[in-house]
Length: 278
Image (cartoon, rainbow, N blue to C red; front, top):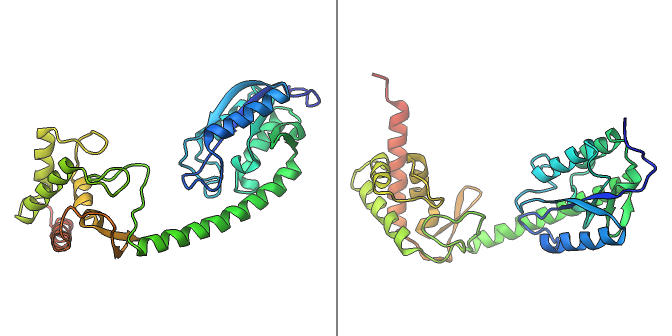
């Protein structure tokens, strides 16, 4: 039996999300604080604060891979919350109907009032208004995504680095500052492989010596080979799989060494694929 859809909401879940690109949204801390203020103003009891890590897009996957959004759906369906408070409706989904539809289904299954479930910008948002806002948010996100792609393309051709969530081996997270100890290990591996030693042999040696990867684990042949083939350590900027410029950061090895490594590792890899079983 569903809840009484006519009663006023009392239990609220706060939901906050921010894409890696920041997509013009406020910080997660500010979003949560604003939602708390709105909840207090409406005399709601906050029973859950669901904050997504800044790594997923509400436009591309429409919430399917967002763990906290899925948790919000479960809480709603199980009747544990009466409403959700968000900074803006775009935090729920920029993916249009398919994005927020599972949440609407959960609202209906719980017997809640769809016009008194989503509290955004300090006011209640019904399903019709949510649909209109989501369409506008999706169009806005598509434009921003295209603009961001243009900016990244220009930055790549200018040789600017693109820092990610995880840092690359040999450099600090800014992709510019060289970590001397790791750079020396890269040069060691380069010299050994160019002298005829296999990548597998270097990996075995490093693991015996306790040389850690970026994440502190053991090396594998594929990981080290990917590192040695990377244009990044040769001071080259790659974009969409192609080298487009000389990078604005110090190289760990020369371009000549990079080209020789590409040739050697490609030949060895192709030889392994074509070798007959014995």
